Image (cartoon, rainbow, N blue to C red; front, side, top):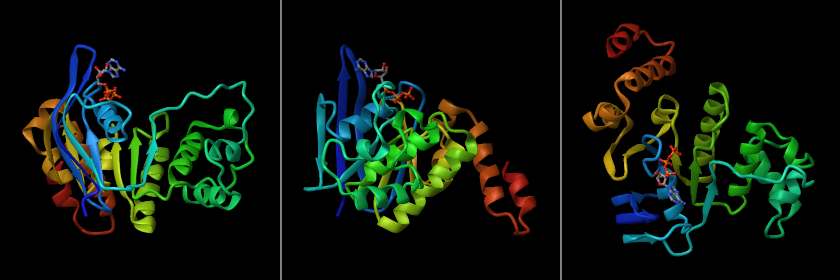
Length: 245
Ligand SMILES: Nc1ncnc2c1ncn2[C@@H]1O[C@H](COP(=O)(O)OP(=O)(O)OP(=O)(O)O)[C@@H](O)[C@H]1O
């Protein structure tokens, strides 16, 4: 059963219509990536989906009782406030030590429970935010540029973990990313957003769509081909891949 459906969804911020006429649906277990230039409404779309901003037009139908885990782009915490990772994860609801341990394990941060939040590295902090989102056993995991500030190997490892979580927990994933060459190849579907849906489809369809190329140029298509080439190493396909680049 479809997890959520947005139909002609529009959102206004002040006098500006940031999103207009967005159609989108998410099926169980699929990984959908939203790409688009800065200011194209990606975060706003995610925030509309979690109910944090109102729609100005259109509709959003969310399956009754759907458990959503949300990983924000960033979270400001008062650095002066002493708070361990476990304490942070137990807010605002009391959460058992074993649930916290399991979520941290799944997020790839099994040893962070007693560390101070203010002393975590960027990558550790993101894993703790992921652990927090996993606590609700989400059927839909929503990630808003969750790898901001991580280096390329760090973000590649993070997205690999997301794909592993999807396989393990069966959750669908809706994420925003700028790292097209990393996430596009790992996504079932890509939606290219620029206030409205410019184009959508399988990663290779979107990467070669004229609307996508108009926004991002052809460089990322080359990067996607390069990613494929690395992914297929060990096979004697070098010639075909060179031709694709
Ligand atoms: N609370 C707000 N009040 C007024 N305008 C806002 C607000 N939040 C976002 N906007 C505007 O809405 C537009 C879309 O912002 P949004 O953060 O959704 O874009 P984005 O695609 O996620 O951008 P980025 O890639 O830079 O994160 C921008 O022009 C932004 O300035």
